Image (tube, rainbow, N blue to C red; front, side):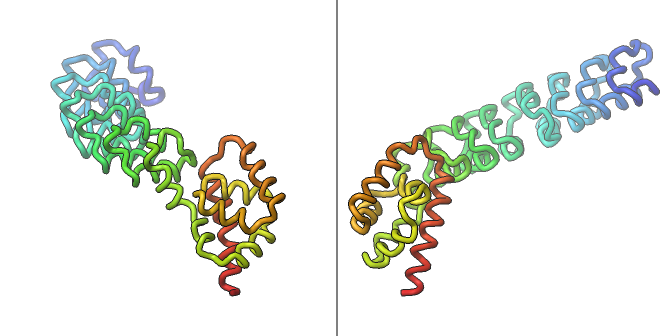
Length: 259
């Protein structure tokens, strides 16, 4: 007992005679996976519960007849080595509550959730936790709301269904406001912005109407330079472009307020 209290892995070297119910409980409370070295006859529901509460990985060593929904939920709530816990969880014990607990902790665990439990709400929570969970979202659940969440979190448009790209750009960028401004205001705003990287970034993912308005109110030579800079900018992170768009919009909104 003293050895286990000082160093929990010492439990694996304890003799069969020394492994009492009390010693086993002490071991798993300190280190859940120590359940692996508990004699089968001492693996009670109470002991297994204590082990998975300490470390979800301990679920691997729980006898199948002792794996209940409650115990599995505790393994996930432990918030430690959840991947291993889900790997050794019987699929029939996976519930909506358990799945939600898992993906809120780590969105990528969506890949471990049975297809029939992957609801729109669950997938949204998963991508909020980790945008990389998007690759495990069923195609029929890739809604505009979910895609917008992913785009705003990871700053990229890769893997987003093409039919949503335009709407995402429209919602994320405020530059459509430029279209409704009079030419004099737009020209003045562009003059103060110049043709630097900020303007190029802001325009790179906007609609054609915005670009036409900008080009109309810029000297032809400057517009050509801006277009060249945009063409050779390379891959653009949505977040960078969005930040640039906010700065550009601030200039135009200030001019609009001044009349």
